[in-house]
Length: 94
Length: 415
Image 1 (cartoon, rainbow over the protein chains, first blue to last red):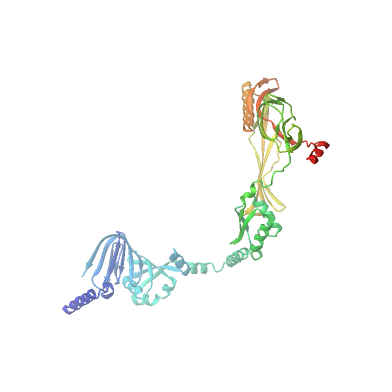
Image 2: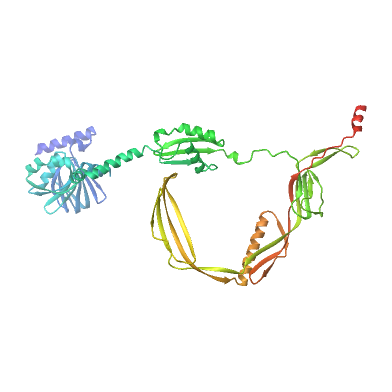
């Protein structure tokens, strides 16, 4: 466990040193929220749960938990998804 | 929008996924690069859209995840074609439509002119028709350069022409020479006199060319010479040795008189239109005429209105199809008399209008003695107008021969 964390921070430092984008090197999720009604997630692994009140998305790091109302996935591809609806909160769960 | 059209052309389906782990199904779909849209949860199941080609690749994923798949909706062109595949006439019609469109687009359907003011569309169309350039001709046969050449040759005052084909319309742009609107022809150098056009008393005379024959205060009659175009050339002894002939030019004003009379009937017939008008609508194609409605009537007094329109395609392609309407309006008439005030108003209105017209011509009214008389049947405004106006009118000058004396010649030889 400790070794893994070390490896992670090494990678992070390397990326920072080389000035490389972290979403490419680390596979970090890119979350773009537009106002309160539109959201894009890139670099995710998959959907864990999807109702119109809650969407859970697995990424390489933490899990993203999105609460809201009338949530809908506009489109859904291998590397990007777009969610519309009234977004109320966004959490990261380790 | 474009995306929607592409989706429609390729066909798409709406499916519902239910089962133990629909999320796994979704993740597998994205792993296999299957594009999903409009994903929405619906009572323990998900509904989503996907394209027809993606749907065909779905079977192994469905098996793997043990989900239950139902097709909710099919949409798009492939399904439409399949549904209507038995409607042969529809496809025949479609093919016919496409082929007619193709054939018709090979013709000129309209001729459009731009920039012509002096030469009207009708005149130019007629000219082009002589050269076999008409609407409904084949596009291939149009010779733009030839049209330009013909127009330039025929009309001297058209200085620039361009003919181009714009889709199925022949566009002809024209630039006319503005100078030709003025009369460029030189006035004839024929000598002339100015004579009186009317009887009157001269009040003012300003001569620019010629010899004045009258003075202010002279009484002249119609036809009297006011300014002569002949100028005498005198020698030192005051004898006339020669004449010079010129175009007499002068402003001559004179007081004149004019009789004015305007009559009108006291009685008139007033029409009151009855109600049931009869209508007839017609459509005429070539020589065949279709009518709706009848004009049969037994009205004693009636008015018939008719309106006719010829159909045309675009601006200048007239079709042999006309349509129009006839209307028969019955009326009853009754004899009525104008009141005295009405008569007075109308006659004075006429007189004011007449005076205005005179003033526009540059004639001044100095005095008038017009009075209105009303008889039993007719009313009239009568009187004399005292005017001041230009009375000069052109007339040919009489050419006089000089009587040469023999002595003149001998004098010349003596010196």
